[in-house]
Image (cartoon, rainbow, N blue to C red):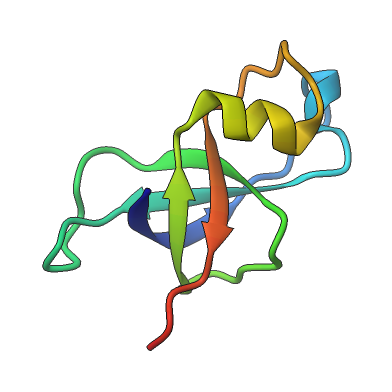
Length: 85
């Protein structure tokens, strides 16, 4: 689990079948001092996050596969929570 900030959204005309119906966002992972930590990542969003929101993301493959309901999904990251302010 890691903090991240939503920096944008993705529009895709063609995508893997396991991602149909999912909102895709670009998230920037953050370190403990809330500074950028690495490269931005693509994540699915079941929570309705908006640009600028701070979110909790996971790269747990089993959790992401369970969320999308497919063992062959190419996606690695998912938004799993919104931290309290």
